[in-house]
Each structure stands twice: as structure tokens, then as C-alpha cells.
Length: 511
Image (cartoon, rainbow, N blue to C red; front, side, top):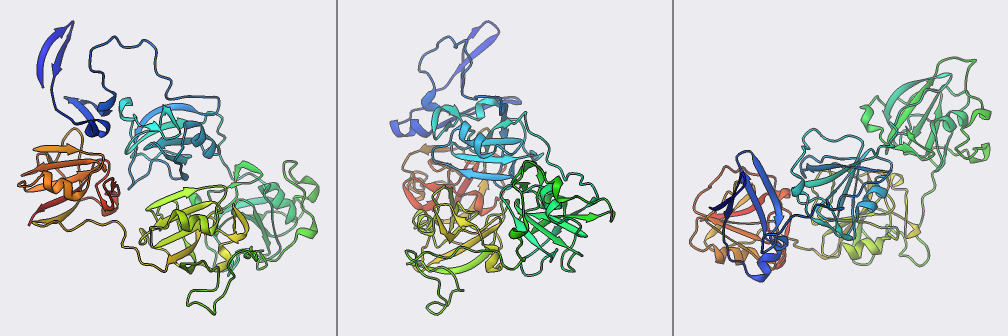
């Protein structure tokens, strides 16, 4: 850049670079000076002439009585800022994200269509420049929804801290592991969408122990089972269905209370008024939890026609069983959606180009060609949530998914073989300190082959952010190898190839 003229205490600089029409739609501009930087600017939005700045601030970061805007923060796929829940929406708005995260203290909108919730923000997430969060929300172009690795963060000023409440006559023992095969509390049990700790205490009136689990389940017992041991408190993270300010365990995790006296226990008349009353007619044993079965219009359950475990059959897929999953370490991470009309077929259609799909938590669908993180088989009864679009089908549960494998093998996206070059891995990059800075190309129909042709003669080339291509004979700035899963953007010109990601290069070097 060359200095042009001075205006007051400011010196103006200018630079010229020719872009074709398609490049101008995707190119990003970053400016740095000393320790300051203004990055992630869309070139297509830059004015062609100087103009007076508007005195009115943009209303692209709305606040309300429910949530207040906190600023633009960094995020990373390796260490998410918020891990309470995540939603993907092709029509995301700030308001939708706030609704999805209404029971959490914070939420953040990212990359136009991603929504993350949590009660605490990871220390690795730092305040970034406000201009970094410049991607329009996919459902409202007048609002900002973060950017790549950038979160538009909001806080709920009405949030009430979730607690393990004091129950008269009982002492709180902690969070314990549980399973359908070996219950922590093996006495009577009940379930209710309006469950509270108080209503569970009332139901188990006089029992030596009671516990709440999975947001809506209540168990009683004379002792704690030998296979159940004390767990980290954060494992019991579900709020109670009838009171979002109380903890009610989690998937296979139970908050347990122990009787402290024999004369001062909760009576049935002290049941919380916010919960529906529970009578003796609702008593069930822990092993008789009802599980939906397919309707006559669905494919039938059969173990005789397939080597797959007993369970649903779906044309074109082999049912694998009920498997573990985790919000912070997804088993299938290539693609996801959540809908109030989820069925096996809806998820299969959404994941039609992948080897696996899994339905979870009643309304969630996940796709992948392989497993991103470890998973283990779980008891079939663990997957007990009815699908939101068909109550006669089962769609996993919390941290549990019904897993299906396509009978047609899909190769999936890959890093293609390029003549004269060897794939060098996924590498870090930075807008303010490019690794390959000899020349570059932006194209809305980018492929790895196109980038290789453009960079012919250079020692290195790399694709980034889906549409960007960079060339160089050496590394202009430091770089390090990153996890392969970081380079997860598909090339817009060939969806079977990877083209880096935000601040990540899919890199090749001369053979």
C-alpha cells in the first residue's frame, strides 16, 4: 500500500488489485497496523468512492429483554466457546438462536447458520474486533451471525443459576452414573415432563434415596447400586422439565438425595404446585420403560432378515443399533439438522450422500462417512425418544443415537491426487499473516485442480475457506499442522473435495 494524502491526523493509503466479478463476491479484506487489525471484511460491500459515515449505528446486533449483545468473540472447532447445545439452521436468525438457547445463560451465532448455547464461556474464547463478525444470518440478511471462527455472543440477563435444591429431610449426595441394565436406585420410578426435584421427593416419600435423571425421570431406592459411582458434577447438566432452575441429572446420570432423618421427610401433600400430581397409578419398574415401535406403515423390526441388531429396517440401510454420542465430541460430524418433523426417512434423505446417519434426541439428525470420535454400543432401551415427526419411530435419546449404515458405500469428500504434488496436510493460516503469499485466486467454483493449475510452477499451493487459492515457494509466515477435521469446507466446484476452512489451508507440496 502506498500513502496518498493526509486528512487531519490521519494518513490515507491506497492499493489496487484486479478481481473478476465472481471473485469480488467471496473475497475478504484484512488490514493490520502494528498490534491493531480489522479483518473479515467482505470486498463486495466496500464502497467505490469516499463518503461520510452514517451517524446511526447499524441495528444488526439486536438486543431484547431476553438477551443482551456482548460482542464478537473467537471460537474454534477444537475448543468450542459454548458446549451446552448446538443447532444448525439454514434460515437462522438471532431471534431463533435465542429461542433455541432460552434455558441457557449465553448463546452465540456463528458462520451465518450455526447456534451455540452454554451457561459458561470457555476461557479460550476471546473478544475480537467487532468487524470480524460480519456474516449475515442465513434467515435475516439485516442481522449479523458471526463469521468463520467468530461468534456474535448474547447473554440472558434473566438467567437464574441452576442448582441442586435443598430438600427438607434429605441431603444431596452428588451426581452418579446410571444405566438401564443396572439401576443406581432399583425401587419404584416414574416419569413426567413437569418433573422437579421436589415432586420426585414427594413421589419417593420415605425412601432412603431418591434421584432425578434425564430431565424428567424419578427413581427411588433403599441403597445405591454397586455399579453406580460418584461422577463429576458437570455430568449432571440437564435441567428439570418442570423447573429449569434445578438440575435433573442427564443421560445415564442421576442426581441422588439421601434421607437425613426418619421423622422429617417430604409428604405427598408438599408436592410442588408447578408440577402435575403423581399418583400410585404412575408407578413403573425401571425395566418397563415404554419404547415406541414402528407403525404398520413403517418397515417392521426384524433380526431374521439382516445381520444387523434387532431394530428398525429401512430400505437402502442396515440398522447398526443404539450408540453413544456426545455434544462435545460428535460421532458423525459432517452434516447435521434439527427439525420438528424428524423421521428415519427424513434423516436418511438429508444424509443421502454419506455412509452413516444417526437420529438423536427425538429431532436431531447427523451424517458422516466415518466416525469423527469414538462410540460404543449402548442398550437398545437407551434409545427411547419418539421421533418428532412420527411418534411410532424411535429417534435416539440424550447422548444416544439410532445408527444406520448405507448399503451403498460412499467414497465421500477427500483430498484428491494431484500430478506432481503430494498432499501436505491441513495447516494453520491467518488473514494478517498469510503462509503462502506469492499470489492468490478467489473463485465461487473453486476446486483443488483449479488451484493447482493456477499455482503451477510454485513449490506449494493450498485451498482455503472453500473459495480461496494461495501459492508460494516458501512459507512467508509460521504455520503448523492442524487436525484433518479442521479442513472441512467442501470445494464449491466439487463437493467431493476439501478446500480448507476458516484460517485453515488444505496444502499440497511439490513431489
